[in-house]
Length: 112
DNA sequence: TTGGTGACTAAAT
DNA sequence: AATTTAGCCACCA
Image (cartoon, rainbow, N blue to C red; front, side, top):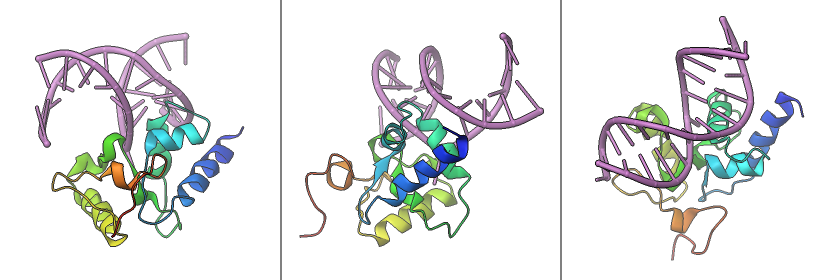
């Protein structure tokens, strides 16, 4: 499998994440056939241009944490804003409620 | 091949 | 909850 194909595969998976839901780097890596390559997934998203149509903001670190920009830079705030705009609930600590918005292990739905 | 790096993860403190 | 340490995978010089 060529690198570009794998690259596209990841983007495809991320694009499948419905609004209001989130997934972790590890999840994406596993779905892309590279379990354990969470870091690599992050690298792929880092190369993502703006307006790519890929909801990169729905991809978070394990536990629903935002590890971008050290977690407190402008990028992190932007991601939080994008998520909140889609109805994703975040704790003051900046973590997403994975027990509610997890794409894979979903069980409860936001709203109502 | 070796070593450094990164939008990671898990465990320990 | 916040840091630190060690282990991961894949990329690059």
